[in-house]
Length: 184
Image (cartoon, rainbow, N blue to C red):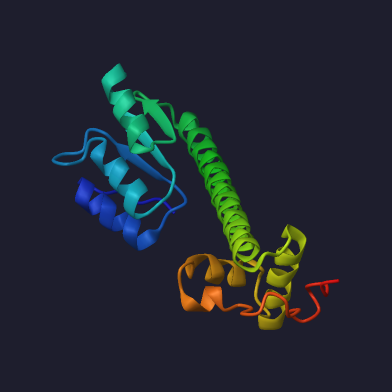
């Protein structure tokens, strides 16, 4: 689908309505057009932006880059140059989105791991458990609740000073569901 807008505001409205695969923005738009429209599209309606301009100076290029433009085309433009630039912009945008999702997943996994380690540490400190037994207790708690192991770990780590965290097992000599070996 191809559509055209006379102003930056109309262009933003068009992008909001149509949610295109890519937006080609001419920098010579009146009013708040220029590069600001590219940044606004990227911020509000994420899609790859191709900037089309008759200016090739470094300042405009730097602003286009900071606005999130995926391609920069200078007029006069031959018709056969536009399609490859748009296709590449779409492909790069998809790669960046995929990398962003992967990075978010890795950050979440790292945070989960830290949470589990903190919870394990709390169990070890407060109940005098070994690392293996503390981890097994977290695993069992997660299985009993049918939640990921980070669920009980997060709950324990966030209740650091609360009575519930201290009373997981009030009697450290009493085995918890067969997890703690009996003392000799």
